[in-house]
Image (tube, rainbow, N blue to C red):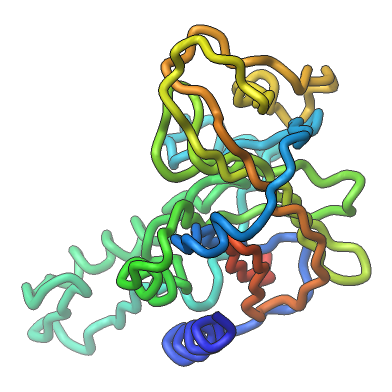
Length: 293
């Protein structure tokens, strides 16, 4: 196990061209959660059945990119000037020295006239920056090699791999990030729970992740009480309502036969890959500071 993680970290650091920016309250966060397909750990460990599960009062959900109205970008009260990380690929265009010279686009070998090149450059500059908690595209993922390596090994099963940006605050002020992944059973997923990433004197990650096993629900009594997933209203950062943590699965086609938790707190360094271990799952996380324009 340790050899595998060491190999993954070496591969990622070698292939990811990451430059650490100066200190900022905005960070890019990338995280992989995977399960161990280890029969020995399944049978040898005695997993507790009195697991109490709950969601914090403030939970943020990652969301996909949306087209913002033009008036949002024109509102001076809204600051969207979040810089891309330096390892994000950019398009560099040079002005031709004469009318007889042509430029080539980054996508293909088709020549572009100078006027066309100028339009592309303006379009690129005006491209909206990512919002907080917005899922970024695959190109922004520095841990792709680690994720593919895990997929190729039968012993491991990746459940979650996302990258996003957010401002980090103290542990008391930072919202928890909802994490779901793996197969879906009714209204629940194999992987559920939250992570909280905060900055005080150091970076900190606090995980409360739940790995469920499911069985068909024939009306039998379930030992585990699994709270419903938070909704958009309940996950609003400004919502002060306390979410009721315990609600039984009612009229669900599946019930939870076992839940194991990964609850760890770890101090981290920015720009370094960190690994959180568990007999049945693991977390790989990379937190990188961003520069703001």
